[in-house]
Image 1 (cartoon, rainbow, N blue to C red):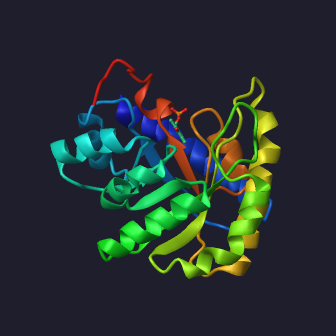
Image 2: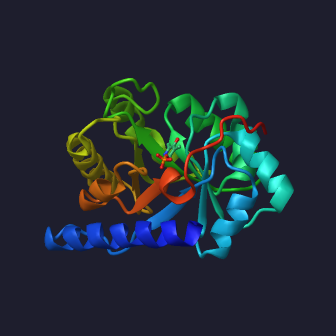
Length: 232
Ligand SMILES: *Cc1c(COP(=O)(O)O)cnc(C)c1O
């Protein structure tokens, strides 16, 4: 099941990447993050065995439970909203925190990373799509935080994360992804180490890649529907 789904997803990634090369945008490879939230821990073991290296979880508690069950293997991404009071746990569990969306959270993560002698990789989540969505920096807050980023010595900003709105016609997501790519290029001119643009989920990852994403977060297309009755 997973291996067939993975083949299909990989084929679509390759096709979208080929389309982008024709458009002469930069970037050669795409990292596939397997989003294993609301699936049992074994799904992570299966993913790693299938050759996937990056695991995406959206809740600290669930990730902790799974790492205790399996040990920490692979490269873990936090993709869900993080409250500052969970910064300590998040820094202990995740290699990359994609969902950083406030200055307050930056301060908390910097402090917790310093405490354990870590430099925490993060992405800045931008709220470009707006509709029905609360998380992500608003433009004005993002502009205000940009000049301060270099001051966080225990945080390494690696790039940008964007979630598109859900739409009936996935083409409607294209301008959102295009805006994400422009923000990524701009950030690259400002900081070193900027190399990750995380955009696209099961419903829209080919379009995100065409518009410049080099990291996609895919759950349903790999593992089927999530089981929300699972408790961690
Ligand atoms: C759940 C989730 C995904 C994966 O969604 P699918 O539609 O199942 O691929 C990707 N990104 C974020 C931020 C998520 O919360």
